[in-house]
Length: 277
Image 1 (tube, rainbow, N blue to C red):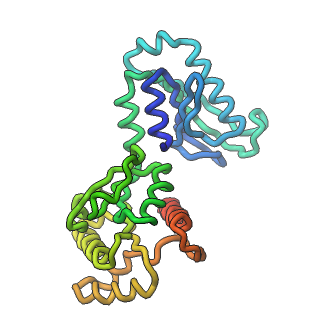
Image 2: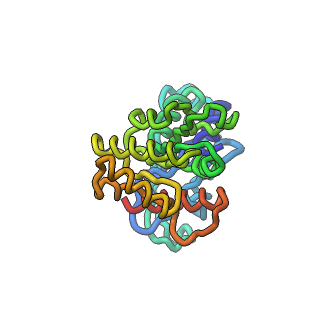
């Protein structure tokens, strides 16, 4: 279960304080938009740990204890803004400043909170339900991603997946490409090279028409990509268009071929790409 799913399931049972990093200045543990949820007997997420987080948890629990009945009657959450200077007073050497927003939320706020937290999830389409696909979903579902998991074999998906994973049967599999969410990151690792080629071609056509797939990664060796590149060039795709495909996938230097290792390498590459945009 990822942090959003964990928090939403807990919020359904009782009130919480949602703590969000609203603004930062200088060196700080986490960026704006980071959140954690403080409940009476639980904590979900993190705003960076250390004394900052301890003080934020203490303040959130004071809010929960101070007005439990008022919070349940209030029609809308009322934000509480606090500024923390990460210097000697907090025993942290970062030296920057963090503004935190504290919002008391209740089960009645669940639809609004769900929509707000899920809105910041990055869309990712994963083609292929094999060993590497399963390992990738296991890793990626813990990140703020909205995963569309696609395969031409309907029976391939596990019985239970995380809340941010949607399984989709598509036959032919490349027919799903035009319906992907805008700005989707795409990973291609179907059970056959023929399917992989068709998916890549569909992604290139969509990129030509809309330019809204910032990353398209294909599992395989340099030899596989050389073959694909030649065949796609024969279909009329230009060198510049073909340069948009990442193959092999994963950060370089990791030779381990175990599905779990590949999944970690690919997840690291996706994180690097997000940090350089």
